[in-house]
Amino acid sequence: MVVLNRIYTKTGDDGTTALGSGERRPKYDLRVEAYGTVDETNAAIGVVRLHAQDMPELDAMLGRIQNDLFDLGADLAVPERDGKAERLRVVASQVERLERDIDALNDKLAPLTSFVLPGGTPAAAYLHVARTICRRAERVIVKLAARPDEPVSAAGIQYMNRLSDFLFVASRAANHNGAGDVLWVPGQNR
Image (cartoon, helix red, strand yellow):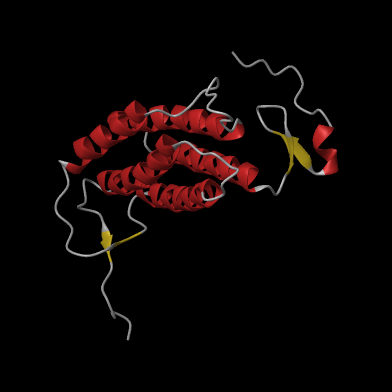
């Protein structure tokens, strides 16, 4: 259990922050950016949930995802060293649960005939915002993983990739199962 007695420590006043391992890194460090962008994704999902209270199945899925994103942040904050995985890691079963949730939502949707523009209901629009932040987080995590001295769990990368898919399908579900989707019309304004 995490216990936070003091919110400010002043240890970051020099422009550094501590990873979960205690190692200090500059606040602009790519690993810090990775888990910070995961946190942004989580905050955006929190806004979605304000608009999804009349969709209990979706809201429950989003609540589980928010918890998973904290797991991923913890995973990223403590890089695995020398094969030691003593800290919390995202695991394959979390990715698989996302896939089941995607399938459950997608089964109710009409097939797409065009790309979907962000919009429709407030929940759908905010889900698109969360999706774009998620994609940015994924890009940062993949960039971090490309560094030979910066281990990142494969399941963490898979989770973020699947999460952006989930957020897209969820946006369609929040748009009355696709009936309220705003579709792209190529060249409409020429």
